[in-house]
Length: 259
Image (cartoon, rainbow, N blue to C red; front, side, top):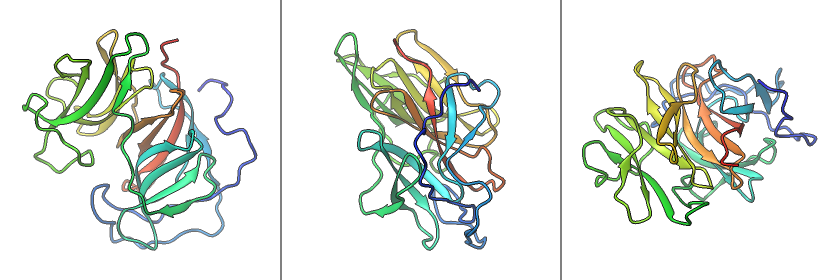
């Protein structure tokens, strides 16, 4: 990891989440006891190292620790994060917000929204939109559910520029979903299944037409969402987790820009 300044430089008001609430990302929690430590040994947020080969983001900061945390998006000029979470005392997914320094955690009534699926190209001013569709439907079978989905629903990621027909950007035969666009319309990041049956983040360069895997840790990496200025990336990962059923939120400096 480079010596770039950490994302959060102000004095941190720490809201600590400690492992205990676990479960499948798409359904209920596991049967393990739901407990929270009152004396944290390693408070949040914490900076973690990039895994080998993760060269397109830096200053990776872990924002949650414990539970099933999914679908993060930035709010309020990128000062707050909205996400869904299964955590005590609840056994079902609920919406929460917190500041990016992890302070001010509170439950919300609004549902978690999707990241930007439509932006304007910075050069041509054409609208660029992306979406997930059932595999083999040519983009007609739009899929709006949480990704990864139940077995049997293979999906792929599409992009449409202006009035042009949508085209597939995920790799051939790859189950993929949860796309997000950078604000300038240059890059599309999505969650795709690997040959090992795990899920990683992939980036597609809309200008060059190239697709590259950008996370390398074991387990799940997905649910990408960009800040309004395109300089930071929120994502969900199982990195740094002892419990394989945890899904935590991370934020990183995004190094691929069109500048």
